[in-house]
Length: 261
Image (cartoon, rainbow, N blue to C red; front, side, top):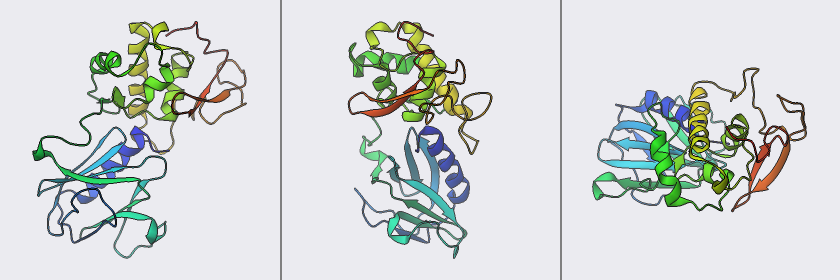
């Protein structure tokens, strides 16, 4: 499941392979906006939350959002792809690399000079080392209500971006907060701790191949339904929470609603 850490790792690989090189060929079967042009060069590749942006020297930016199914791959020219050609949503060829985006539901382009971009609504990127948690805190009241649950808030990319179902569950466990806790029951100290913890976990996984949130390796709760909690041994619970319903994992003993960070 691509979350902020995955997209940042993909962006770093693409940046190293493509930046400063001339686009020799480009294929984008369906796109919202202008197609990238052959002959321009790649200026920068970056991740903003779960969005991957490729900036071209001619001022165009290609935006892809992986949702649940998308991924970026890098191949040498002539190398066999790991997925079928019909699954390719973007193919960018430079002299020594072929960058392929498979199954991304969102492929669009824009020019920042127009004054507005499709990512203007996003909150601070928790995967960035220079993230300012205060900015996320300032957006909570603007984009949420006291009746919203903390599980819903952590997934709201308008407040802070990069967290998906995995880091939502892992962050709540690390702070011992029950996912169904309404925001009205959380104080500012707890809220700040949640954002800071999510940022720490995301940033700690920017370089590793396998996600790790506990010192023993692996994940504490996500994907561990009915398995013993790494802290207390209680079977992990799983449920679909929020609007829309999203899968969430938690320990019923370590995360009662009365316990805060």
